[in-house]
Image (cartoon, rainbow, N blue to C red; front, side, top):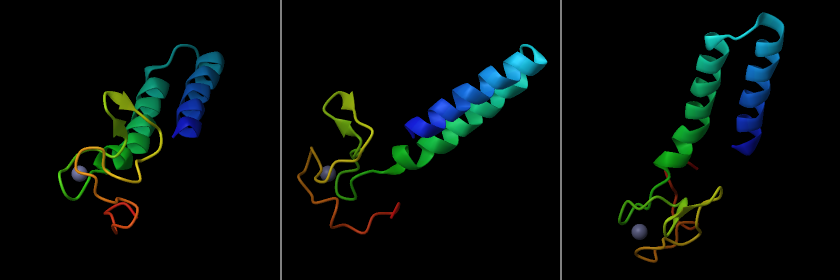
Length: 82
Ligand SMILES: [Zn+2]
């Protein structure tokens, strides 16, 4: 996730350098970021639907092992993303 973000930023900087200011590079970077974030945003608790990447009001780059709302063991659950 962080690697993809860095890659997207580097892509924008590289294209910017060689071809001048390009909106195509920005569009490509945004698409890449969306693709990188899509599975993360779908990783929800099968019990209550709470996103496993949210810890209270904070978003963490790794999923919780147990749901912070209902306490379900997310690691033991065959999730839709594993
Ligand atoms: Zn839950």
